[in-house]
Length: 359
Length: 269
Image 1 (cartoon, helix red, strand yellow):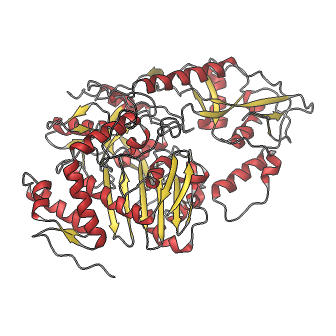
Image 2 (cartoon, each protein chain N blue to C red; image 1 turned 90 degrees about the vertical axis):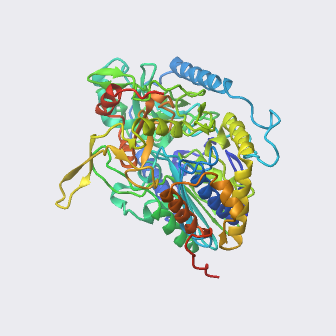
């Protein structure tokens, strides 16, 4: 991300009606950043450094397992050349690693104080989460949104409200921002641009943080395993009866089909979920079918391989892994429902209790 | 044709290369999965086609819920992509009150879209999924795409460039890397290990890939028919009648027939 050298006020500018709605909304949010109260600026947390080191460590571990690009190993042959690009560092896979986001300095200790944690979640929504390191923080993709919420930390935490009327200012030479929160200019908080730790992949089931261990738990895991990894990679390590390579997606669908005499069964058959309203405008409930379709891919009942813990969290950072434990075969419609809703406990209960498919 | 620098490298957008790659990916998808499986790791795990080579669109998904749609007219291309969880409400700032279920839902991904490309946008939107219920239980029915690009003459734009880390951007970036009119499996663009595996299997499946290239090249010049030798390579074991009929229908849709399959009307000049 490029360093922004303009002040937020300068950035307000004139709204161009031809710009996309997203930009217009950003401008709206910039206008909202205006009311702030004094609060001591915390030092850059050591926790931030620890996060960064952990994430970098994870990346290193992931890359260690990868063999070199074809050009490095003298292949491929000239007539079968996959894209001639070196994306190992330029264009990381589907999510950014490390996942740099804007962190607002919460007051109190929501990592252990459940009541305070719930207040932050109620006020700031999906920006706030428990990490896999049992820390609780709120991270944002856009600094404008971070600043808007940071201005409300005082009252949300139950402390004195921050004084309003100030705008975030960029910190020269960094991607950080400061926000004055009291009449004294020295009284400001820092919104740090830092690596966001991974959201915990544990799902609370009956009050117990629970690991997802779905019906494909007994299948051999792919060679490269990690958060944010898709199921359709080519290095699944799996082959069909002819010795041809399969993606993990194809492998899982074949295992399912083989166990069900050629039909593809939903692993969440019978699951009920809201799906709009009926002709009388009353809330309608859909029920997941048992037998799914192989295609066409647009069919609502087409079989898809679903990440129970989604590949990406709401901040666009990697979250669920491509472990077979995290896979379930469900309909396209239900998959689209789950994408709007974090894994419900009911889903995890069903999948964890389901009989395991045989390899 | 136009080049753009992107975090994924140098992207080259060429309308004709994109259309060829779309046609090739559609055929690969057919022969890359059961019951017709003749090659490993096709460019598309699930493909659908609408229209023709002058005005048409392809839907390309990964069978996990993520997809891209590329539509073209004589004058340009519109591309839209969706990654689970990052539709127009989450990623383009679309207000739930503004959802129409139509092209306007995703227009924010295509700032400055030329009027001439409206037909392409409409075709593309026709292939997009619609959103299911949100956490509040409400189903808005928004068209699902969170990032896009358009290509018109020597101009290319879209949130693919304005927000290059947007979820789904990589699916679209791949369409700027279809040199020679061939799309590769998405993971091979971004994972070196996958790239090596794909290269290995491309060599193993070279005869089938060469056949697909030949058929696609003929089709790009006009409606074509598979030869007896091609049929023998594609169907070494006669498939079940319903499988064969499905294959005939799918290929007929893109103007490729073979002896015994219904004739198709010639394409308009």
